Image (cartoon, rainbow, N blue to C red; front, side):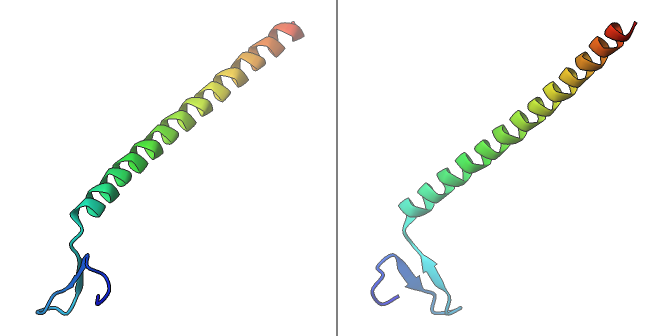
Length: 68
């Protein structure tokens, strides 16, 4: 805490608090961006899996047509 002006010691709890509001704001913006990227990744993964299933069904239909 001594050489870090952004840190303050709470006299009551003896805990250390970061008082750099800009750093906290940047962190929160990054957290929101990470959450959005994860959501997009999950949605894309679901869509890819749906496309794989559809392609598999089309292949099965083609095999059935060829076997007739």
